[in-house]
Image (cartoon, rainbow over all chains, first blue to last red; front, side):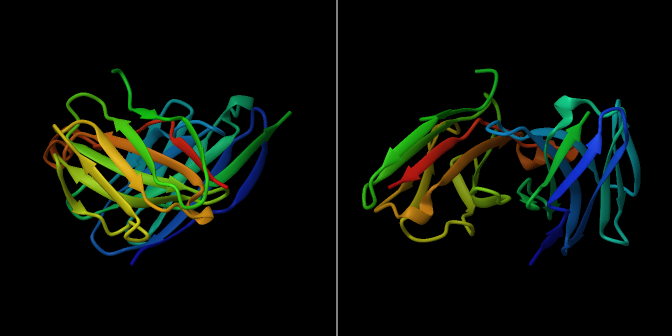
Length: 110
Length: 120
C-alpha cells in the first residue's frame, strides 16, 4: 500500500517564504508530483521530481529525498493568489497513475 | 479541445437514480483517469484507461460504478442506484501514455474542472 502525509493547513504572510512538507511510504517509487488546486477549480501541475535534489521553477521549488521518503514544495515571495490547496502525489511503477495525499490548504495573509 | 472537458459541471439527483458523467480528454492523450474528491478529502483514484482498455479499475468503490472509453477518446463514468455517499466532485484527467511519459518528461496529468454530483 501507500501512505502519503502532508499538513492539513498552513498560514503564511504575503512576501514571505513557505515550505510544505510531504512524506510518503511506497514500493516501486517512480516520481513525486506537486499540484495546486484553487477552490472549485481543477488541480494544475506544479512540479515533478524523480531524482534526489532540488528542482526550481520561478517562485516554486521542489525537493526530493528518496532515501527518506520526503519531499517539500517551497514557495517564495508569496502572493495572495498563492492561497490554494497543494497536493503531493506519488507515481508508482511504470504507469502514470498517481496516488494523492489529502492536500495542504495554504492561506496567504497580508 | 485545448483542455480536458467534463460534463455536466453540476448534477443533482435523487437517491436510487443512475447518473452518467462524461469526459473529453486532450486530443492525443492515450491515458485517461477518473478520480473523485469529497469535501476536505484528497483525490481518490477510481479507474485508469490506456487506450480503450482499463488495466487498473482497483479504485471503483462498488459494482454500482462502471466506466468505459471509446475511440481512445471520450469516457463515461456511470453510477447506478446512487447513494448519498456518492456525493463528490468527480475529476477526469488525461496524459500522454506511459511510453511517452518515460521519454518525454513527467507525463503529468491534466485535469478537467470536474463534475459535482449531489445525491439527495
